[in-house]
Amino acid sequence: MVERAFGSGQVPQGEGFAEEITHGWFNVAYRIRLRDGRKVVLKIAPPSGVAVLTRERGMMRAELAAMKLVRERTTVPVPRVDHADLTGELIAADYFFMEYVDADNFGIAIEEGRLPAEVVMAGGRQLGALNRELNSITGPHYGPLVGTGSATWREAFTLLMEGTLADGRRAGVDIGRDYDEIRAVLADNASALDEVGEPRLVEVDLWTKNSMIRNGRIVSILDHERAMWGDPLMEAGFTGIDLPAFGDPSDFVSGYGLSELSPSQRKRRFLYSLHLAVVMIVETVFRGHTEPTTYDFARTQLDLLMDR
Image 1 (tube, rainbow, N blue to C red):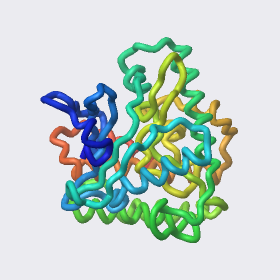
Image 2: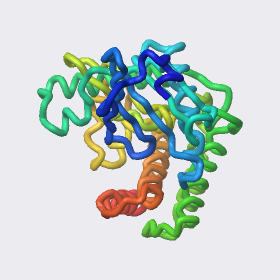
Image 3: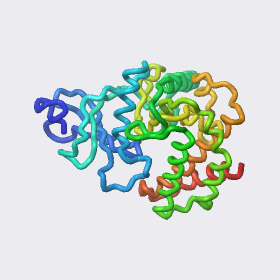
């Protein structure tokens, strides 16, 4: 794989040239030291035989498409892609090599208490501003970046929710509610989705742990595989508006420049948090989690939303 990407002269010698980066839950990533000492990152998608959510099929191709859009149409920093192989010739999975960003993971640095409060605040605001710039990219339809989409956001989001519910049923996941209860809430509030009048690039999973910080500034945004054409209010940075357990969104919202939400916008935000809670419950089965922490947390968040 290294030879195909960088040439035979960069093939590492000996052992210990690959180190797994273990923070992600979907793709696998390795920090690779090339023969000349330069570091790169190798990211590999799940093989085709691995069960994934409907929404997750072909996600690496969506990530590559998203990174290309961001590089070409914004000033948002993303890693350089050095080589992508979608042929399946070497291994039975898509993979790509990208630039290694020598910086701290913002979210992990916050968790470990290594950043002063003013840096955390400024970083949150910068994330909001960067996310707003990402959302300035408009698209041809709603839904997936790669492949066919929908003419309306209501249709695209309904397909997204229905796909997740179908995944849960297929895997026999107990979400703590009747699946039709979720459908009923969506149906009761779906008219709010009709106010979204233009498909925009939505990262969906842009939060502190998908960003890198150096000297108090965000220097790279990572993990774009869940990006789609949709409503910017779906961005992860806004989740705390509905669910306080996800953290105070004030810095992100301030950096984004979002004013007070209208009643219709509140309904849409509520639906996006509802979908996130269902996804977090269902995916624990697909990820093969052996302890219940994430499942129990997501069940609690879903109950909070449904009680409202």
